Length: 89
Figure 1 (cartoon, rainbow, N blue to C red):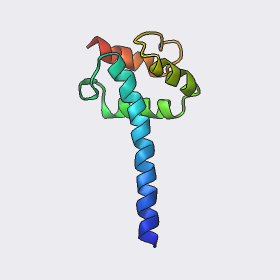
Figure 2 (figure 1 turned 90 degrees about the vertical axis):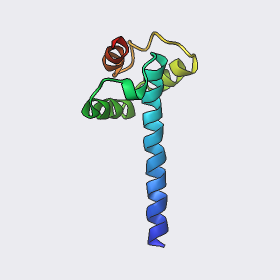
Figure 3 (figure 1 turned 30 degrees about the vertical axis):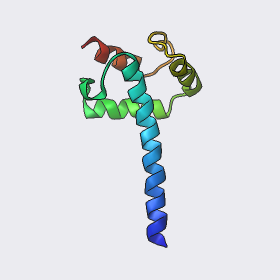
């Protein structure tokens, strides 16, 4: 029984992490940057993920992503400078 609880907790945690990373990947992809070519350190990406998880503008980000825009996130995204830096490379 404990094994099933552990597997369930890991699955839920994995889905949560996937959702967070998927949001970050979508922001980079919208600017034409593949995650593998982001030219950011693992530490920078971890910080970016933390900022994304704690972001107070998640609803605005979701709306921006749903509109399929490429510009305009700079005013609300705490990772805007990292995204722009990766896009310039």
